[in-house]
Length: 363
Image (cartoon, rainbow, N blue to C red; front, side, top):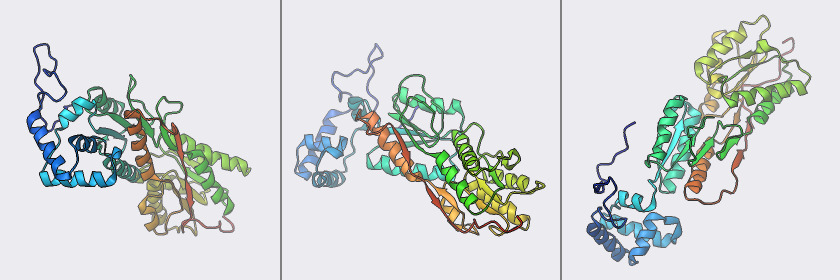
């Protein structure tokens, strides 16, 4: 893939042996102009040049009032740090790569939002890569780290794009027993809790529309569904399990297949909210009512879930926190700080709304 470029960055001179022709980290970057500018910032802020440099490179190491004075002076002086010189000295780019398998997915959009806010707060830039879940694309973007165009990777899918050690955090869909730090949800326990809710309402024929076959999320949510059925003494009917792919269309098609069964389910559990919304449309097209004729539940609690008609009962998981904590963990790896915990499991919540009800007699 083409290298990242910035027209404002100056390229260091190259010597005859192919190495940067510099005798000090800042040589070749117009030192005199940079030093003059930073001195002007120091004068306006009433602090030393060293304090200005520390504030620009590591703002967390200076007092808030000092940071505010330096930032105001930077704006007043119109100073722009020479980014390539800073990168050359620190061996960091300030870029973080986030690999997203489906950028159009509403849940991932929320994860990205949390990651962006955390990166910005830490003075890092987030490079967003829509990989469509393709390994070759993920490997290509991971090369940005080895090519010194990025400092680390956040991977939202259960695949390791690195063959050599590199800073990476695996979030959301995680690799079982992988070598990288992870941030996940107990999907098995969450799916079990949702299925138990339907069983408590009297449902015994509970349909399940699964996610992609290859996804660990699918595996864990199916296992949780089966755990609840087994605990309640209910046989797991294979006819009530339908394959999907987390899309609206998969929910629509899965609901059509469920409703065509000789004995249709009284409740339908979709493994994400987008499939549940697609299923809701198909159920209404069949002239049925939710929850009077069929209870319907999802997973994720995306913003649209609360605005469905009826509002969707679902599992709420903290999508923005996934992104935020993944960035914080990755920065700790990059800056070689100790991790409090290498494998974080975030909490879920069963959010009850109007799409579920006690099963009707005779159903």
